[in-house]
Each structure stands twice: as C-alpha cells, then as structure tokens.
Image (cartoon, rainbow, N blue to C red):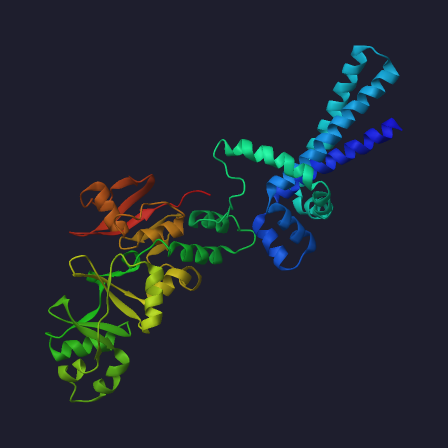
Length: 410
C-alpha cells in the first residue's frame, strides 16, 4: 500500500512539474488567438496567467507538499525493509532523488517544453477549482512572497503588456520562413521599416528629376512631353528651385494635337506644387497623399532648396517592390557577383543582401562610399565598406556609377 501511495505521489509531482513548465512556456500571442476563438482550455489558462503569482503559489504548494510527503513515505518504507540502519535511509533517499529527478522533473518538464498546449490546457481545468479551494493558503503564501519582492523594488501586480517593439517584430517575421514565403516577408519588413524611414530615403534626387524648363524653346518642351516616361512632370524656370507647378500629361494630350500649342496654354494646366521636409516619415507621407488626394511632393531641406521628389508610386514600390518588380539597379552576373548602380539606396541594398549598412548618413551607395573613402576612387579599387567587400567598376568625374559585390554565403 505504501509503495502504491508513493507511486501516486510521484505521478502528482510529475503533473505539478510538467504543468508549471507548460503554462509558463505557452506562447502568449497564440494563447490570445485561441482564447478569441473560444477555446475553453485557452480561456482558463489565460485567466490563470493573469495572476502568475497565484498560479505559481498553488503549483509550488502542491508540488512541495507531494515531494515532502513522498520523502517521508520513502523513509518509512526504508525503515520497515532495512530497519533503523542509517545507511538504509540514505539509500532510500538517494533512490527517491533519482526517481523524482527522472520521472517527476526532467521527463515531464521536457515534454511540457516541447508540447506545452498538450499539458497546459487540461491542467488549467484542474487548477481553476483548486485555486478556489486553496485560495486562503495561496493568498497567505503570496502575501509574504510579494512583500519580500517589494523590498527589491519589484511590483508583482504591475501589469506587463509584453508588447513587441519594431526590431522584435522584424525578428519574428524573419524567423517565420516556414509559414510566410520570402517575398511576403520582404513586404512585411518593408512596412515595418516605414516607421523609421523618411522621404529622404526613397526620394528621386534632384539631378534625376525629369522636368520642363519654361525658358527652353517650345520645340524642346514638346519633345520632353512626347518622350517622358512619367505621367507627372515638374515645371520650373531655369532652375528646379524656381518651381512653377506640376503638369499632368493627361491634360496636355489635347494641347499637343493643337497646332496653336504654346507656353501660356501649358501654364494654365499646372497644379500647385506641394512641398515636404526631407525628414518627413514615410508613414505620415502616405496618409498625407491619401488625405490630400495627391500623388507627388517636392522634398526640401532646412534652407528650402529642393533636394528631390517623392511620389505615391515610390511609396508603393517601397512596400511591394520585392513582389511585383525586379530591382533594375542590381544585376546578377554569371560568376555569382552583382553589378550595382551607384545611385541605389542603402535601404534597398540592405534589403536585397540582408546587409546592415548604416542608413543614418548618406542615402545612396555612391554617397556612402565617398564618405567612407573621403575621395572618389578610381575604377578597380577594392574596399571593405563597413565589413562588406566591394569593387569599384566605373566612375565619372564626380560620382561612382557602377559597383561589384559578392553576396554573403548562406
């Protein structure tokens, strides 16, 4: 009978040990999801975990009581079988320790760590009524334990939101490759990056802006209109800083068919330009485009000079570019290397290669290399840029045009 009671106590000890690990190992976000879907075990487990001090107090109360009682029974069994000899009691204590360690601690806790929901949800049904029955004892135990923790400045009842920050969310998305395809991972990472990126990171620099100079001859203006790859063009006088307005090519189709087309008719179809600081967050700019029903904005620095242009298409490209577009500035070669345009943005290069080049300073690869070397290097120059090897392939007088790199080995 004593052996039977001892075996039952060891099973109870295994239950307390395994359920403790299982309940603490539960994924809080999956638990919340299951609770919203009315999973009864998840609802009870979530309610118990709202006060982990009470739950742990109940589990440890039961586990310690069972283990101490098992130790006492093992001593009684040893005395009845081996007499009052101290060596017999020591042997019984050693054997009990080994059995408890294997069958009541390591094995159940390992199972609980691997399959927490398998143990936690049924255990929650048992602990819910037990907590009500033994609440006075648990309350007294928690009272002294919480007072002791308060001496060290720890507030047990302070709510812990466990909210993930941006970097933790990025890690979560990156590690979900078995569930989320890589192309969708890139899209989600791009959306998360928008919280920290600004329009300066994705704008078209002023030297690449296609526009119409109203001081140019009419024939030249017509040529620009007929060959423009864009639907909206910047209209200015002599310099981009002297902006006149924004022209939508749709409004010029009828004018181009009219033989009386002139500059005055063009000026009548301009819309008012919209300016944004270069430090404007991308998330805010998306809302601005939506609220104002606009598609294009001019990016200015602290002195009011135009530094570039950002469009709604640029913002959409930032989110879904990895899905529907191939990066035209990065071309794969047969030897495994990549030829990169010097004007590619650092953020795009980081996203393609999973690199970690700094984005706080220069926004393009050309700017980052020039800042790093403090000169415009000659073609054939090889450098290690913040730990990443690159080779300069082509330059001109004032910029780096083409760079070769080898992607890191996976």
